[in-house]
Length: 189
Image (cartoon, rainbow, N blue to C red; front, side, top):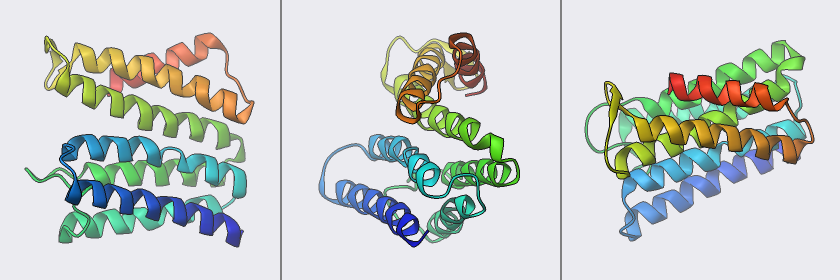
């Protein structure tokens, strides 16, 4: 267990440190750094899956980051994860959603793989949707600030993330189920 915590927290600390360095010392747009960090955090699921399985230990690391993200949002000490403009608590919602999924997994052990599907779709699909919606033209609006490109990229990357997860864990879903999950993710994004 201790080794799992060292790997899990170590991975997150390295990600945050690298994103802070990139934010402070490069000209890479901060939003791109945030989204790449968002995507890479999804791989934390593999650490949780491997070291903790469907036990209460799986909740500790995500719950810790709810606290860290909330403090960073309020105190603005991690510049790479907090937006400059406006008050958007997305970093808190992201950590809360991962924590909620991990709690369900701890209560219902059969939820371990669906937890991973949710994390991977959220990490890959949301990241791709945000970047596509912001940078691709023409910007065709669907609802509010949601774009056609964002919808398409969320669908494609949610699907691809499920393929990747199935390949890594050797726990495939039926193709139709993966397509349906990707469509639901894109619709909810």
